[in-house]
Image (cartoon, rainbow, N blue to C red; front, side):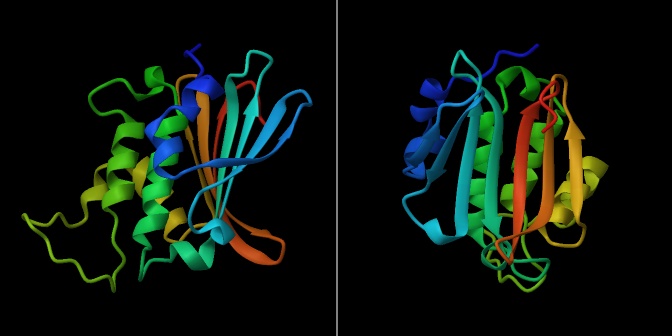
Length: 184
């Protein structure tokens, strides 16, 4: 099993500090659930961490308003920044090892994704159809673009899921990472 990330370590990470995350509530059940909000765009973003008894993250959820993050035509750069940063921060290092690791590819291609109507002024030679190198990456990005409903990427000891949902009568997208024996 990979080394799980402790909540205290996460609070000191670039993800936590860059997005100025603040704990809104903490439910001390089993598992402990922490609800957070970022410093900006709070009305569009919900973050949730489920912790085991050692305060290690066993599940993490990033929930974004669909209207805010965009679709195949226009992709909000702030939305894809927090999404790729979330994935990078919550998945243990052992799950990201290897030259063609799916998590590393996904983070790279998610951050570089553009909508069909987005205007890009490249400083270097632009990449087109860059995410076609991996079926798993393309499927994940298609859910983010609102072209598919859901996708799941099995990793060594965990699972990364993405799904379009309706929550409180609003279309949203949920990116959820969890250890394999925690299938909630």
